[in-house]
Image 1: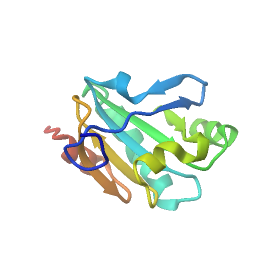
Image 2 (image 1 turned 90 degrees about the vertical axis):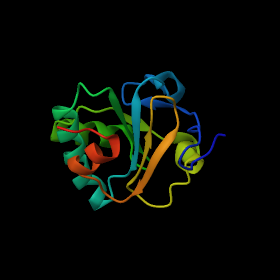
Image 3 (image 1 turned 180 degrees about the vertical axis):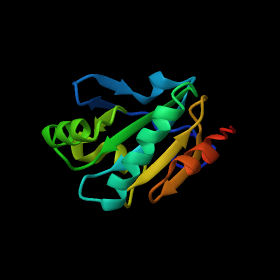
Image 4 (image 1 turned 135 degrees about the vertical axis):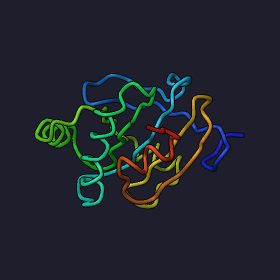
Length: 142
């Protein structure tokens, strides 16, 4: 079953990153994926970005892709923000009436969805995450 609930196949989507490259969720099967829906006007979203970058820096070999899906801001605003803060994870722009956010029933930001290697939803989290929380949800033990 496809749907936004735990154990369901994550709904597929295709969005574009800040360089104009197409990213299709289904193409990432075989890796764990975290969808992180956010916007720059959300304070907890911005605080969370530091934690996401720390996770990326420390656990780059864990076969985890984090897709930071922005809901409101322009590519120019996002490029400046990412560069200014030294963030290296991909940002996708949820254009076309926030298709992905609607598909995943995002009611507030930040919202994150953890997807396993088979494309199944494992966790849905509303609210900001930190490195330890991300590790725990992915089952990463040091």
